[in-house]
Length: 378
Image (tube, helix red, strand yellow):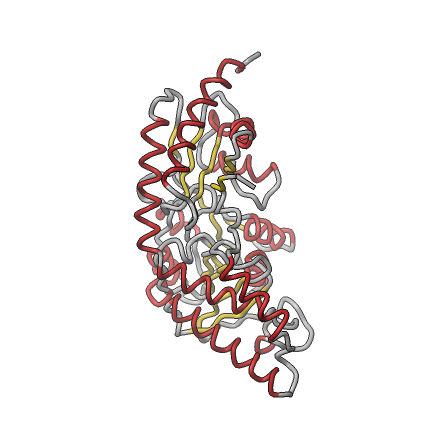
């Protein structure tokens, strides 16, 4: 296939190095880590080493991680399995990923008070509004670290400090799926209680993710069974996924600075060409994570532009790839983008993207805009 892939916030390609690890632990070292023979014990020990590797990359030695099958599972465990109190409330932002937003709404249907914090036009939480929503009855807070649709980076450390100053017992969760490997993450500084990461956003295969749990924080199981992951997440461990995750995470963190500079140069290229479009609105700003660049046309539909670019073998996104249409409506509304809600395009970069591809993508965006605007209203 000759496509140029610019939807890396949706998922990333598994390269030959990662595929080799996956194959090794499915074909050669395929043993069940819970068995008693030597080969299985070695598998069990390798999982422990991978866990420590990822914790070190997260600077999260004041806790542990429990491997899960997806970021969605980890988010659901954070929401549903944190210690609850009767007559208590939950606080989340208006632009959370559906894995958090819909789970929190399920708790609302069970009788908990759900409080939604507004955001600015990029997706950053309103700090003043946030503080006003926390009280002595708040038991759980979830604010994403990096927004999956705009790249907006929240000041999680400040939000944690605010929440804990009002209610020291609140459990603070952050969805870091779009942050880990894309922006610097230091869990010791963020001081979160729970933090979600996912493998397929950084070059590992789908089916592996993790939930960080700070020492002293109580979390109950979402799945019951053989008691793997210290009883917190039962199921036979995905050894190949775990080992690939540790490798991909190590590489992503190592390349973070280099990739950041590369992605910023890509954004400059796109901006210089899109500046020729009078109706363009940049949603992502200079404070956003550089791997996501989101903009919108006022008259040309984002989905139409997406398919037009696909004809030239360029693949881009139009928002979250993990949601139905109603989420696409929710996020633009929360960002105050009513006039631009149908014209959103998300370009998200990965380690394999090249400047030459971005040059052509910029030209294709402008060319297709000039063609498509002629049909608006017809």
